[in-house]
Length: 131
Image (cartoon, rainbow, N blue to C red; front, side):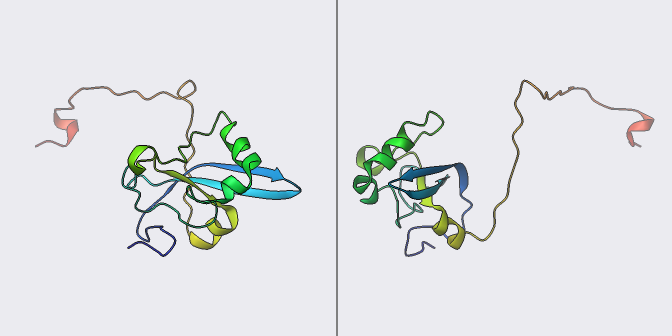
């Protein structure tokens, strides 16, 4: 079920990044979200303040430029040809806090410090609980 501002009520959105931009003395705080089910179809994407189609980006080109110049941020605001974007969008922090009630945090560790080992063997015999 899609809300009036485009978010899907029964979906888990991934937080891609957070960004703070100061423009003309005003502090703008953004959360970039990914809608893994919306890529290419546009359903479930934010349609409120600072959405991909919002004119606020055009009204404050310096804010847009600072976001686009950050090498850690990838974002296709144009939504690609035929309205097929990358599934990401920005929500201002105040709207994020009022629209989402739960946030799960997962820490990703770099592969250079942690390794996974898998041993492909079969455990057989009396100690393997086989009868």
